[in-house]
Length: 267
Ligand code: IPE
Ligand code: IPE
Ligand code: MG
Image: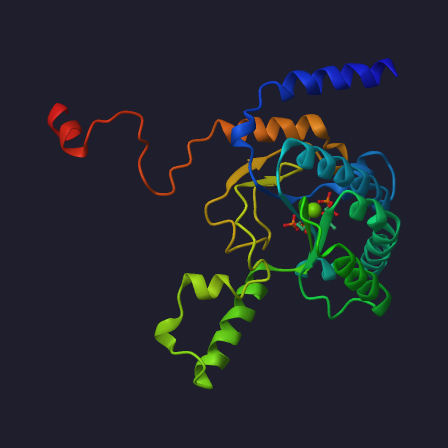
């Protein structure tokens, strides 16, 4: 109880440092480190995945309360099928169970849930609960939770390229009509603003085939904390760090009114 109060106090102090006008609308997260967390504790990797679910629930709540509008999480990559069958089966079962247990609350919170990735290889039971959850929450507009499963950024880009090639060969579009806007409109994230912030936990400094197109100009925050130990405090730290960044998008910082010519003359 006392411990809980100390944590609340720490979080409150950090919250005060947040500029409410600069909260990212869309945060993407590579939730990594579940297995290492469990192994460090001498537990099977599945314990890490389980604990990871409760962390996701906490981060969902915090990001929504903070004023973010979209949270996109990487839950299973196209490369994760190479893991032992037992672990893959465990994860598929976990997605199924969690969705069943949580969907009513998600709906009550007016959260829209969307699954991003190729769902074809998943068992029918999981696909059924996914489709019914998406349909139940489709009109909710307080927050969007995207869960990426069997998702790969390269596969997504190839899929769009194929679609455009087909449309072009059938004469539906001209090759000259292919541009960023058209390409974007065919991505699985179509209609969703690109993430301003990408968080990866567990200290790994790579993208691992996540949202390759969409992350073009996202700010990247690497947390050393393993996902099962991630929490509100760590999320707030990431937001504060993001708010200190100078997002230039290839341009130059406009700190003063000095023109390019003026600065050349004075040097
Ligand atoms: C992330 O944790 C969850 C998934 C990829 C499903 P990991 O399972 O990758 O955990 P580590 O990276 O092996 O510790
Ligand atoms: C990325 O983590 C995928 C998910 C978090 C779902 P991985 O653990 O699969 O990535 P690598 O193998 O460290 O690149
Ligand atoms: Mg990992």
